[in-house]
Length: 302
Image (cartoon, rainbow, N blue to C red; front, side, top):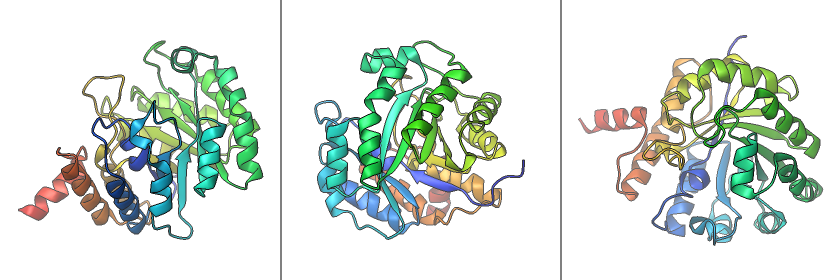
């Protein structure tokens, strides 16, 4: 299959990238991060999360962040909404897209939310219905689609089953997420090929973590199966909570560098993204997790 000529990048650093940071990050910095990402040309930015501040204190300022960002027409500003309370907050904040999360791993579902996969999807029914009634885009994310920290291998049929359930809920887009970064290219091909039998490939996205250094290879494998939407995080922000000291989200700069080399258009300003990654890493007092970003920054400083 020929590679797509254009790819949509969903930038997840403001939400997935920052949510596990131990030090609270100011609302000013979060707003500036989203605004800089908007200016760099991202078509879709995961801005924040309407979850209980008790569980995710870093996202307690979701309403303020959404009120203060400079929105650009045509850009989708997404937020995570695990339940009806979260959805109400998201609708009040005028989010363009709400995101629901379910796992393809029965063990992960039981361990994290004390219910089966089927029960977790049933809980999302009122959220999905209300989102559709409000005319808001709905995205469903399939966690642990390529492996689970508790049960290990996840059957491909389980991933396809969750994808089918999301289609039934009316999801506009469905993420296949390698939550712990254990996937390898052949497995990615197999999973994406199976999922795209039941979901239009144009509505499927890949969310890869780089824990084992496989994320770029996995994105290339997904591209080869017709996937053209990927989630990335500037400077690789967002650690993997299941692998101590391991990297988490694939770095946006590295993905953009690879896509540019493949002649694939994204509409995103690579140099601006390098600047954002270096700025945010400096604010967090650490070196950025993007090899391409750090290489470009070193070259500029030379």
